[in-house]
Length: 147
Image (tube, rainbow, N blue to C red; front, side, top):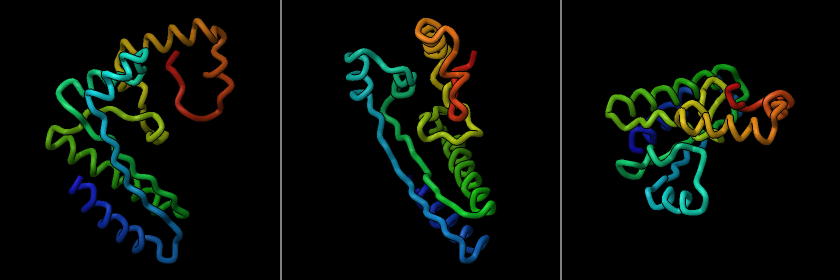
């Protein structure tokens, strides 16, 4: 969290320098995910996020960088910021390589991180309730189940 905070300050300054006069907002959010939370979700019917494996060795933290920008330069810096945090998390062995779908960008594949068993469950459920792939075909944006 300290690294992310440090990078936040660094990248806000880079954004100011890259596009003077640009309009941008940056929000960094941390959300804990605990074993107790996952245990309660399983007890209530389960989850399709593959969280059991993620918290198996202890709690974790999801983080989100929410940025609104009006320049391509600042969009690129946002991706650079995200990648710097992931690189650091990898270097200290803290990255779970799991993405919350609602926090993911289009260049990421959050569903793959939920695990093969969960993905197969989602596919089976999709085939059962929407055999013609309505949600995969009619939805123009967002993340779709692999077919």
